[in-house]
Length: 301
Length: 99
Image 1 (cartoon, each protein chain N blue to C red):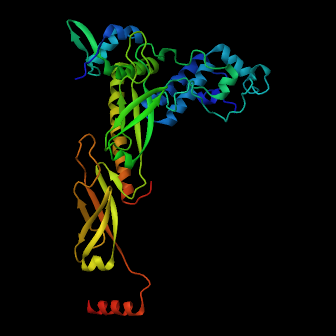
Image 2 (cartoon, helix red, strand yellow):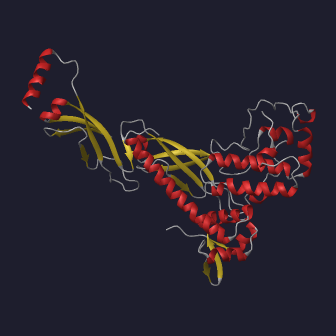
């Protein structure tokens, strides 16, 4: 665990007045506020740091304590707590276990340094933000294999100890977020519950590239089939198909297989197309005789 | 069909500690859609998230309703551009460009 220079965090010097601190904090808050930096984890982290610095420096008592003992916090007996000290730098802890899911932006996280110096959070930096009406939204990310995204399938999630059954419709996109109404934090004073947002990250280790409902793949054909034409067997996402290759097929030729692409989200039975691109495999390790024949072909041209 | 739950504007003002005039300004700017039933004004429950965001911008960053309007428009644009960028990156991968 490292010492944190709160003055540096806010970009002010040690003699800064209350007004300087407020001004510096406001400016940084406008820059890093999560509402104006959606999905930006770095900004969120910065915002936490800035808030923590402000909480210490804008509070006369905390500031005094920090100025006096901050640098030497390791030696200051009164701040030594059993078990503290094993942390790694500026790391943050979640206040409560949310079963692997982030709590969205809650403002409840403090650095180890802060906690060892001032104890756990009392009140938090954003008193105005606690759920006093509508419950908090929860944000979760779910990794899904592309094979699973290909089919409508049920999934059970555990969020804050509650089992949530959902059906993931075939064709869900990478990065798509679905909202599950009312499954966030509880509301207060008769307010509605927050919602649960699940973002899907789709892992694709197949040879198929997905763009929306279209799938793309390369198919290798040998030189002779490319020149003379013939029949090949190509892989589609869910099986094999026989394809006729026309004589004198060029490398890079594309073939569109209608309806062999990815399912269209929430349009059951509808599929995109599969677009195959031919690559041509030239023979190697030619025998003397083969070489001779190629020479012959060359002179014929 | 799901029933739309309406929440009293006054209830929202009390809980979020905002003036009714702030809600009026947002409504005038077309940022929220206030429903009026028998002369009592409500906000649909599913719009509360959005309103909360605007209240945070107002209370925590001291942005006025006009500023919120600008921010909301820009955020929409950022969202659209991020999506376009993700799609473009995905297409580049297909063409064999590393990220």
